[in-house]
Amino acid sequence: MISLHNLPTNQVTKINLTAIIDTALCVGAGGSDGSLSDKPIVRNAQGQLIIPASQLKGKLRHECEKLARGLGWEIFESPKAETLCPTEEQLKERVNSESLNFYQLNGYRGYHCLISQIFGNPILPSRVVVDDLICKILREDLSEVIRPGVTINRRRSTAEEKKLYFLETSPANNQLEFTGEIHLLADCPAYAKALILAGLRHIHALGGSKSAGLGWLSWKELETLPKDDPVWTMLIPQAKS
Image (cartoon, rainbow, N blue to C red; front, side):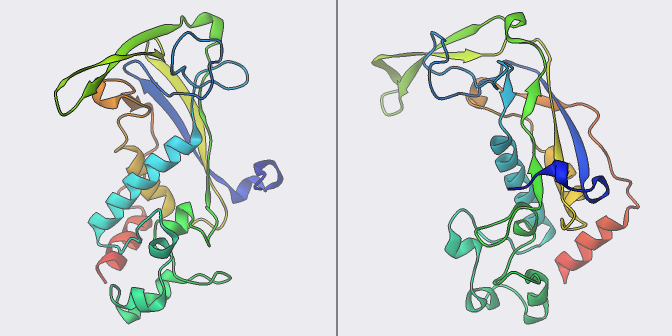
């Protein structure tokens, strides 16, 4: 287990996050939590609304994979271990022999793509720790919002009988702020911060029912790296080699 409190502060780089929810948010939780809805919204122990770190990290990894592929990197397929951690024979069919060294790390067997070196895989531990995004408003200060829905039969394009359900969401159009941090550990690659910041700018919605207009967001005061930062030249020339 990683304990950030036991790490020297100069070994951890932080990215501060503030997500402003432009519409109602629907992040479902297991159990009833005393709500009348079939899918109550997830909260922490203090009853505050949260966007789970696992959801943000998964979405961020997906966006970083798309960016890295656009730059020309060879990205190993997830979530299967056989494709996420390929053998040397599998990799030689896709990568020049001169570039194989980049996919190897001291102390870890096998080969690891650019994204795995940041977010981890079955062999390599993650080099980033993502916080839950938490809305600081107390539960009693946010009204419960129940939104009805109905299951649609895609073949007949009609509502299914006896399939009415209720979702709990955050209040709509309240511009709720969810704050948290991403922690880049000491052994995180130098290019990780640039790629993560770029990936965050491609995340425009989180939670469920995004196609129905729920969970759309914008980032407040997201850090920007200068265009002349050396990390950009680290990414592009290697990707084209």
